[in-house]
Image (cartoon, rainbow, N blue to C red; front, side):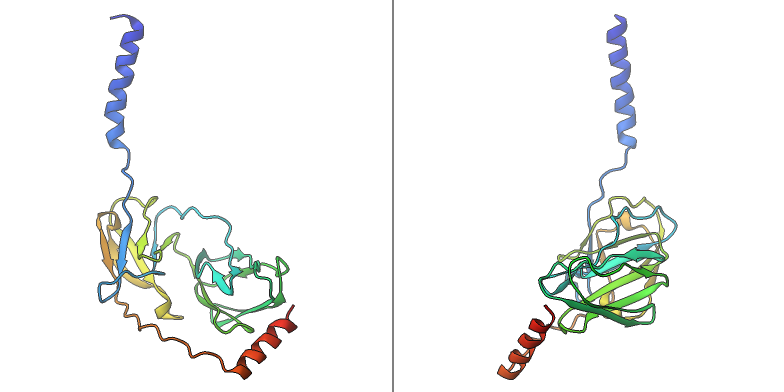
Length: 221
């Protein structure tokens, strides 16, 4: 066999040997609540693995909502709070893990906030009461949040039993709860003991409340 042909044969043979050793793409893990319904905004945290790959942490304000609704950061992280709305916001938290406020800011006026203690931080806006967000500060290196359909990506999580915790906004300021050693890559569905209350429609604002709200928003421009 000519040398070139032999080299190609060896390369193909090695590729056939190596490829099965590569990790398969992990399917998303379905998170469900106690009733078996898809559970969005569930945080899964794992210790003793490489940290999750993440962009610099940002908690935006967009369409009168915190974006993302839940942000998970490691202890000591500096979080930016840009305001992408055309009205001012007054972000604050009274949570034990971080008490702070950012007064009446627009655009990128607000200074970054350092979250130096682990624990849940509940965010609000002193002007827009409907705004509610969460920053979970943790020392556990790997974390992911389930999407609107309860799906949670496990792409960079290794195979094998791992010390696992969970958290959800229904826990409020309670610390993440231990699940024990779980091989998440072998799970297709993970049920958490969360019971979601049915959504209650807010009553419409009275004419007087509407006038007050419009006046308050106009004053913040």
